[in-house]
Image (cartoon, rainbow, N blue to C red; front, side, top):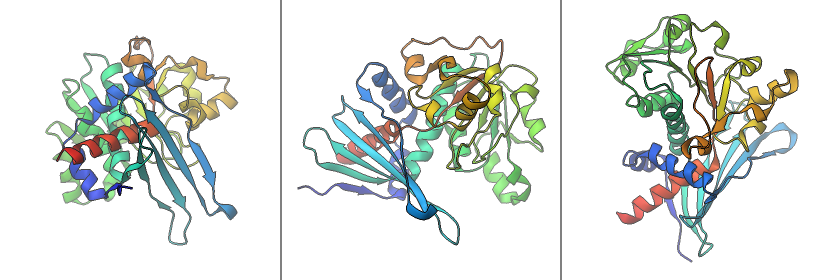
Length: 316
């Protein structure tokens, strides 16, 4: 039996730099719409005695003749929790493992690139003011993939950690784009924003959409905290809601679960997901009110990127 290719985090980062990650994900969502891909729900398995858990994210790419599984443990330790992730790529023809890849870089890239695909599909063509909330690796990756999608005239970034960062760290952020300005407050960052990307690890609301000065596109991601959400659950009732995949997202996204329990909001209110948007089956927002895009991260995204890394490595 051939030995599967093993790619560590540093090698994955190098190979990802050679790929058009948003384009790979666009094809994935079109395949999902066409029935050429399968995305089952996430599987959460808890360790005994509260010692952590792991989440499995699976998926099938029939046209590529591969399936795979990303497994991400959350290990409780005295010195703090440990979170890792690995993606296994399998052949649908031979049934043999093709690749085992450290999924840290895949997770960062696919999280940010999925948001970029959504921004490209949902943001008004005339959007000019971009706001990023967060300053970590995922926030920086968001900016990397979104910076060329519109003719941004104004890019603002705010994070509570900015006040603690050194001048060199702040310079690293402003070096990401000539248009980028570091905001002194959340309120300053949000003024007249057209697109607001929430890129935090917060377990609770980061902004209140009801306090924004005009309708905007708000994007939000997941973190490991239980029922994590970056907007108040009650705000879903006042927004046009979209997500990465409507079959699975409402069962995992914290604000959707809480809103369904406490406010009467229902998953049927989701206007469309990326598969529907990219196949022309869902309308884009009218911006009579805010638009909200929520992603939880799909196993298919990791598998599509792992497959691209495998093909790239094989070709070289």
